[in-house]
Image (cartoon, rainbow, N blue to C red; front, top):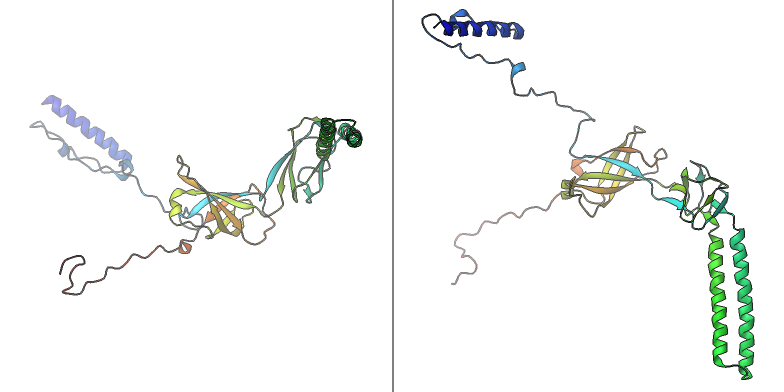
Length: 311
C-alpha cells in the first residue's frame, strides 16, 4: 500500500507539471489513491497541440493557387543549330558576334581556301588533258590505229578527272558558311585566325521566328487534351501572359514519371519572348471537349416479346 501511495503521488506531481505547461487545471488529490485502496487517475484528453492528429491549415486561393489544369513549360526556338566546320582550315573571317542578328544567306564563317582552290585548278587541268587524250584516241580509232579498249580507257580517265573537279569544287564551296535562315548568334565557339579540324563546332545559332512552347503534362491529361485546345501561358521572366494553342502531343508516355510532352504555338506576334524562358500553362476546364453521350435505355412496350424467341 505504501508503494501504491508513492506511485499515486508521483502521478499527481507529473499531472500538475503538465497542467502548468499546457494551461489545464491540475488534477485534484482526490483522484489519487488513498491509503485505503489503489485508484488510478481518471483519463484526461490531451490538448490539441499534443494530439497526433494534424491541424488543417488555410486553403490557398487566388491566381497562384495550384490547379489540376496547370503545367510548367519552357519556350523553345522554332529552329536552332550548332554550325561546325566541314573542312580543316584556318578561319580568316568570322563577322558575327554573340547576340548579333543575321539574315538568311549572310556570311557566318570564311576559311583560308588557298590550298583547296589550287587542288581545284589541278583537277581542271587534269580533266583538260584527259579530254584531249580521249579526242586523240577516238581519231586513231577511226583510222583503226588503236583498239576499242584504248578508247574506253581514255573515256574512263576523263570521267575520273571530272569527278576530281566536282570533289574539289565541293571542298571550295565549304570554305564559306552562310546562314541557313535569319536568326541570332547564341554563342561563338571559335575565333578568327584559329585553325580548326573538320567537325569542330564554330557557332550556335537560333532562328528569329516566334518561339514555341514545350509542356510536360501528366499522362492522365490524355483523356481530354487534344490538338487545337487553347490555353494561357504566364511567362515568369516578363510577368505577362500570352495565348497559345496545342499543336502536337508526344507519341510516348514516360513510364517513370508518367508524363507526356506537349508542343504548342503562340498566338499573335509578341516581341519580348526569348528561347529559354519558362512559365505556367493554365487550361480552362470549360474548353475541354465534351465526351460522347451515353445512350439512354428505351422502355419496352408491354406485351413485346424479346428478340430471338420463337413465336
